[in-house]
Structure formats: structure tokens, C-alpha cells
Amino acid sequence: MTMSMSAAAATTAATTPLPQLKHSTTPTQIAAFPTTLSRPSTSAHKSISITCSSTALQTPAPTAASTDRVFNFAAGPATLPENVLLKAQSELYNWHGSGMSVMEMSHRGKEFLSIIQKAESDLRTLLNIPSEYSVLFLQGGATTQFAAVPLNLCKPEDDVDYVITGSWSDKAFKEAGKYCKPKIIWRGKSEKYTKIPDFNAIEQTPSARYLHICANETIHGVEYKNYPNPAAENQVLVADMSSNFCSKPVDVTKFGVIYAGAQKNVGPSGVTIVIIRSDLIGNAQPITPVMLDYKIHADNNSLYNTPPCYGIYMCGLVFEDLVAQGGLSEVEKKNIKKAEILYDAIGGSKGFYRCPVDKSVRSLMNVPFTLAKPELEAEFVKEAAKEKMVQLKGHRSVGGMRASIYNAMPLAGVEKLVAFMKDFQARHDG
Ligand SMILES: Cc1ncc(COP(=O)(O)O)c(C=O)c1O
Image (cartoon, rainbow, N blue to C red; front, side):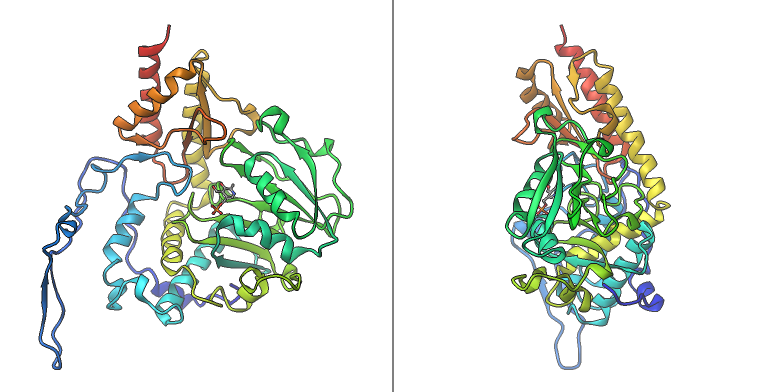
């Protein structure tokens, strides 16, 4: 959105602070779902009461914060912060006294406007996004951005450069070929996507409109530690940050466009965030569908059509939580610690566990690993699931295991995984 933030509007969105929880077995007092719902009476209506008799509705309400939750290592949709889920739960039925849930609100009403404005304002705070950048809350996933980026940034005859560090950048490259002339300037396929190139050693195309990278390859577990500079002054750097968005501070001014699907680090699926330097907006190719035109969305503050309101609300709660944690420098410290103990466990296993990724570019978010005895991998995943650690199977294209340890994965989850890995090794080594 390009509108300036109204502090008053922004503050109305979150009056109750997020409960700060540790992943523990201590029950948190959350009201159980009522099985009898009554509406307040009005002069025109008699009060009604509805007694729910369906067995589906009698499922016990989640009265405890953590006891019945698993550690979810999925790559996305992924685990969300418990305190955010609990706050959403407490606001679900009647958001801030509005008499309705966020799912039922008009996207043009003052309540939802305060929600989207606060979400943008907190994201701007977190990433220190300068005013000359627009923030868009869109739909269609990062996959839609694979087309939207070339459609908005270049003409069909324009050259653009792509660096292929894994499956996602490869998909982005293939989609761009429909709308411009993308060139692969480096590809890590022959080394099974375990590296990030040294940009001093690769030649960029002088006429390229932009240089596209995937900041963190979710499947292969390689992550840029420094971002490259495009070769020429008028070129821009474009990054797919889907799987490391808001996991650490980023200098937004290095980029022309940053895009990210929300469902890894910042919310549920259905929301895609685009951060774009405003002067790059307004040059879409004539064939660009209206829903892919950044100008349409920027001019309409992400409200051109009905946005994914509930998803944006959830992202807003996550941003608020990240701000409350002390911002992205603090979040990064926690992520480094979690990744360190997991990579150390792999490295210290005397080859029982292996991580193929070059040490210098190992992802803090997605940790792929294999077993020296691949025949044990299915057993590993099965036993871990019994211990309430789920979704550890690697992506079908690479096999092995993958632990996704996004912001919302507590340290306790990684510690439990590491303890399990040691125990599993003790029982199966030799
Ligand atoms: C790095 C990266 N880019 C793009 C995508 C595609 O995202 P979506 O499914 O939201 O289109 C993913 C999904 O996992 C991803 O991890």
C-alpha cells in the first residue's frame, strides 16, 4: 500500500497484547468453546439459544496451549507462533467488540482498514522499509510473482538474468521465459544445488533489466548470506524471499522487488507480500492481467478486489509478535542458535547424519539431511512422528529428511529433535 499510516487507525487494530508463551506443558486458560450460543436480545427479537448437538462440534476445545500440539517441521504451510494462534482464537468470534469475526468484515470497513494498515506499519518497522517502497498484500502465492515480476518490470524483448540455486529459482526462470528473455547466468544443478555462486566470478548481462535470485531455496536448503549487486546502475535486484522473509534484518534498499508467500514465516497460505520500489510501478506489459499489475494494487492500497482478509489479519498478528520480540535482529539471533545446534548435531554424528549443503551457505530455515544408511530414513521419520515431531520427510525431489525451523519453531522443538537424533543414532549405529 502507498497510503501513509494513520497512527490512530493503526493503534485501534491491536489493543490486547499478544500473550507471551513458552512452548511448555503449562496449560493456559482459554475459554472452552460454548456448546450453547446465545445472542443478545433486542427489542425486536426474542433471545434465541442454539444447542449444538452435532458430535463434530463437541470436539474438546483447545484449553491448553501446548500439551496437544506437535512440533511441526513442515516447509510450508508451517508452524505459527502459539501466542498468535491463541490471540486469534480469542478474537475469532467477536473481533474487538465489532460483533463479528475478521472473516465476516467488509474489506472496506474501518475495522479491516485498521487491521491492514497496522500490518503494513509493523512490517515497515520490522524491515525498515523506506517510504519510497510500496508494500502490497496480494494473492496467488509466490508462483504468481514468477510471472508478475517480468510482466511488470520488462518488455517482451528485454534481457533479464536468473541465478538458479535450486528448484524455486528454476521455476521462476521458466515462467519468465513466457514474458521476456531470461538468461541463466549460473546454475548449481551439477552440484545438486548445494552452493551459491561467487558473483565476482560470474558474468552478468549488461543489458539485463533485473537480476533475479531466490534468497533461500526451501527444498535444497541453500541461503544467500550476502546479496549481489546487479552489474549496471539501472538494473535492479529481485528476490524471492518466501522462505526466509522476516527471519533476519534485510537492507531493503538493495532490492527493486522482494516477494514472499506468507505461509512459511509470517502467516497462513493465501497471502503474498510484495515490497517494490515505487518508481518501478506503472510499466506493466499491455497483456498483464489486472490482478498481476502492481500499479492497480498500489493505487488501491491492496484493496482493488477482495483481499485475503483473514490471512492479512494473521500476518499482522505475526508482525506484531516479531516487533514485541525486539525486531528482526533478535529474531535472527534465535534462528542462528536453533540452526547451530541442529547443524552441530549433524556434523558431530561421525557421518551417521549428513547435510550436503556447502557450510558457508547453509540455510537457517530449512535443514536438509540424509542418513548414511538410507534404508533407515523411513523409520527415522516414523519414530519422530510418534514422538510428536512431524513433517520431517525431505521433499520428494531430493529425498532424505528436512527440518524446517522457521521463526515460530521454538528452541525446545529443535532441542527435542537433536535429542531424538542422538538416541536414534545410538540405537542404529554400528
Ligand atoms: C522459495 C519459494 N518460492 C516460491 C514458492 C511457491 O510458493 P507458492 O506455493 O506460495 O506459490 C515456494 C513454496 O514453497 C518457495 O519455498
